[in-house]
Image 1 (cartoon, chains in turn brown, purple):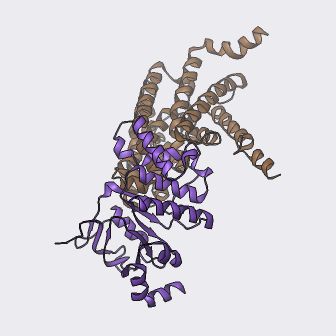
Image 2 (image 1 turned 30 degrees about the vertical axis):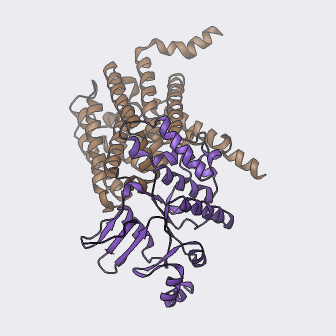
Image 3 (image 1 turned 90 degrees about the vertical axis):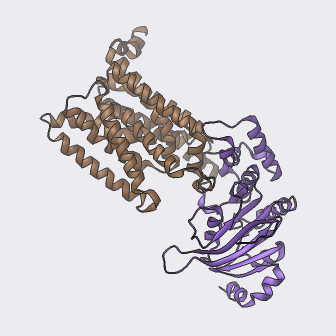
Amino acid sequence: MAAFWYNLVIAPLEFAFMQRALLAVILVGITSGVMGAFVVTRGMAFLGDALAHSVLPGVAVAFITGNSTQGGLLIGGLVAGILAAIGIGLLTRGQRLREDTAIGIVFAGTLALGIALISTSRTFATDLQHILIGNILSVTAFDLWLMALIGAIVLMTTLLLYKELLLVSFDPTLAQALRLPTESLRIVLLVLLAVTVVIGVQAVGVALIAATLVTPAATARFFVKRLHHMMALSAMIASSCGIVAMYLAWHLNIEASAAVVLTMTLVFLLSFLFAPQQGYVWAWRGKA
Amino acid sequence: MINTMPDTILSVQHLSIDYDGTTPALNNVSFEICAGDKVAMIGPNGAGKSTLMKAIMGLIPTPRSSKIVVDRHRLGYVPQHQTIDWSFPVTVRDVVIMGLTRQIGWLRFPSKKHWQQVDTALERVALSDYGQRQISELSGGQQQRVFIARALGQQAELLLLDEPFAGVDMGAQSDLLQVIDELNQDGLTILLSTHDLTLAFSRFTKVLALNHELVAFGSPDIVSQSSANFLSFYSTN
């Protein structure tokens, strides 16, 4: 029995890359779980997906210049993500362009630019695969430190601007009436989301990062009444799912990023069905 | 030079708003509201009622020829019911404390004093027991009272209510009116837009009839006499 548990839980941890990968999914889970609460409550899921794809050109530059480790991926993605966030913010400023239109344009444009850049690389297929589905087992100790630092900045900024971001999200008219800089706060939120996306790209890749923003937060919403409780629960769900998924990936020999998102999706479905009061079964029993 | 009455709490002079350059939403609207007034604003859909409220709150730019004098720090508002996402994860107390955002200040957290202000405001609208409930768990009338409490927390002197009775049942409407009456007796000035003419002429001290231009403004008797044609047209459309 002891051998069973050892093989199940401890043996994978004997490898340093697995330890780093576990720490990475925890860091990504906490940051994306917290920021995902804004994505879900403000109906910004499409934006999250667009920001994920908009980091592609920066990540691509890091790959083709051979700087995909030692923070190169993060820094490249960070620059591209922040530029895209500000671009979307400016295009939609003063409602000159509908937000979904601006997002659609930036989304496709940056994706195309990213693909064009990667296509100049001789290892095109491998690079693209790593960018799209992540490569969490290649996370270095330096990457981890950078993830932790950037994540801490995101969380600290969110904490300090929490009441303003909450007000702008719930009742933008009052925020305007109180003379809060609503446009600047919106752009700050977009930049924070872009940074969150960049932290997660190495773990789960461009194609799946939006799920780590949306799914844990949507799951948490079934259980809580307040936004900051939703953030905390969402972070816990995302990190726990990340840990479980890494073990699943190890033992079942499946792609880690897919395991992360599938675990989160399974927890969401269970919550959708069985959450007290808000779950489908609860509502169905109430009607019966 | 605009001369206002000493107890004037809101002065709107020559207000014109033109969104698209063809049909003005508001055309040369002028009126004054005194402290303690309880004003019902009536007018058909698209008459400019919400635009006027937005202009008073300073949410839309106004031309230089227009002038609005009001202390916007002492201005509370209750939004139209459909403009709020009621499923948003916030409790009643969370909503009320939003009104104190400026008072609390940047990079700061609410203190015990701020939460006491919230509880006092909730007590005044008879919602003390509902503070920890999620906003979606309340009825339509109770939700409107939460927003009134938010304005009270802001220590508002003038309260703007945009169609607060829309989508609210008769019982809740009656409760809401009672709260508004009590607050008005305590000195809060009210400007409320409504489609209910009977209510406007029976429960308010002044009526403001608006149809892009100011049709009439004054006591219910004066307005009903001076704008009989407008009222008969409005009530049949």
